[in-house]
Amino acid sequence: MHIRRRQSWELPESAATPESVYLSRRHLMGAGVGLLAAAGFGAAGALAPAEAATAPGDPANDPTRDLYPAKANPAFASAGRPVTPEDITANYNNFYEFGSDRTNYQCAVAASRMPRRPWTVKIDGLVEQPREVGIDDIIRAMPLEERIYRHRCVEAWSMVIPWTGFPVRELVAWAKPLSGAKYIRMETFVNPKVAPAQNRFIYPWPYVDGLTMAEATNDLAFFVTGAYGQPALNQFGAPLRLSVPWKYGFKSVKSIVRISFVAERPVGLWEQVQGREYGFWANVNPAVPHPRWSQATERDIGTGERLPTLIYNGYGEQVAGLYAGLTSEKLFM
Image (tube, rainbow, N blue to C red; front, side, top):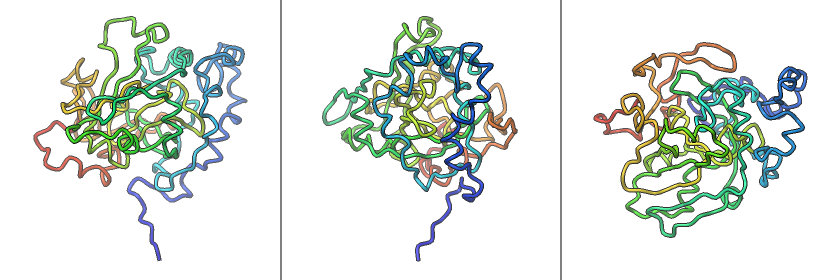
C-alpha cells in the first residue's frame, strides 16, 4: 500500500481554499468593482472594460490561453494558508519598472499596457546551442501545471498564489547547459516607452538576478506563466517570471527576456544598488533582520493577519540541504 507523506507546508485538504472558489473569483468580484470602474479600473486592477478590450496586456488576448487552467500538482495543492484573492494580489505589486508604489492601482494599469506579444527569450551563455525562442514555443513545449505557493516579500508582507507554469529544471534540461555552467542568470525586459520608471536612472536597468544551478534544478524552483487558472496578468510578471518560494520575493525575476548559463555568480540589481541589505542568496529567515526592520513576522495581505515568519518560508525540508557547507556565506539576506 502506498502511503503519501504530507509535505511540511501542507494543511489537510479540508483547510485549503477550494479550486472552484478562486477560479470563479472573477464572477464573484462583480458586485464589488463598481467603485473601481467609476474610477477607470476594472476587476483585478485591469483597465475599465472599454479600454481593456484593446489592452495589449489583456490575458484574454494571450495566444496560450487554451492551456489554462492547467492540471494541479497534488504535491503543491496547499500552502498551509488560504489562497489570497486575485483582486488583492493583482493590485499589490513590487514592479519597479512601472512604479515604486506597490499599493497604487496605476502600477497595475501601466503594466497592463505592456505588449505581451511578440515576446522572445534569449537562451545563451554556456549552452550547447544559444538561441532566441518565442515565448509561445517555450510554453507549449513545457509540462504546465498549477502549484499553490507562499510568497514572502523582503518588506515583511506575504501572500499565497496559485501559479501555473513549469519547473525550472525542465527548461535547464531543454537548454542543455555545458559542464562549466554554475549559475543561471535571468534578465527582465527594457522598454522605457511602456515602463515609465525605466526612463529614470535611479536603478541600473535591466533587472537581473540569478540562482545556482543546484537551486535552479531543485523541485521547488518554478517558471510562472499563469495565475488563478489563466495566463498571468502583466503585473504578476507575464509572460514569464520566476518563483522561488523559499527566498525573498526580489529574487523572483519578472517578465524575463534572457536566461544565461554562466560560470560566475550574477550580481542582482538590488545587490548592486544596496549590497549591504540585499545579497545573492536571500533565503527567508525570521532570525536575521533586515538592516531596517525585523523579519520575525509578516503581514498576510489577504487577511491582514500578522504571522510568524518560517525559516526558508516553510520550505526548509526541501531546500535546506542546498546550503550545507556554506556557513561562510551570507545566506539569509
